[in-house]
Image 1 (cartoon, one colour):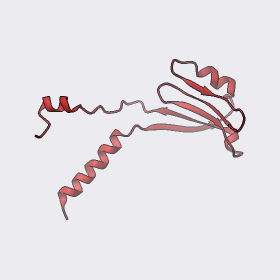
Image 2 (image 1 turned 180 degrees about the vertical axis):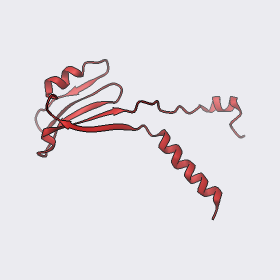
Image 3 (image 1 turned 60 degrees about the horizontal axis):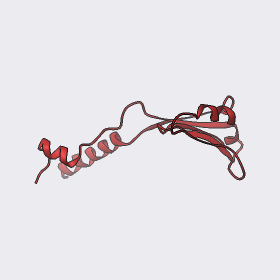
Length: 109
């Protein structure tokens, strides 16, 4: 078995896991999360909200930071719940540009 290939594959999986932007989600009761309450909490710069109308059976808010809430739905359970999601509390790793890597001597020519 080629040990180098196996280690490279493991390293690739670990790097992808670390670079993925994780989000935490939770299903909560719709109580206290009516359309008016959700819209009121969705008033920050860059926040976007939507309401139930027509065939749209959900309402919610998407905050500028990527967090948000979606309430309602089609099934009986979805009509009684909201799904909240937020971004992780740690920053996404920043990879260097080619120029920065070249200046640091990390690029092979």
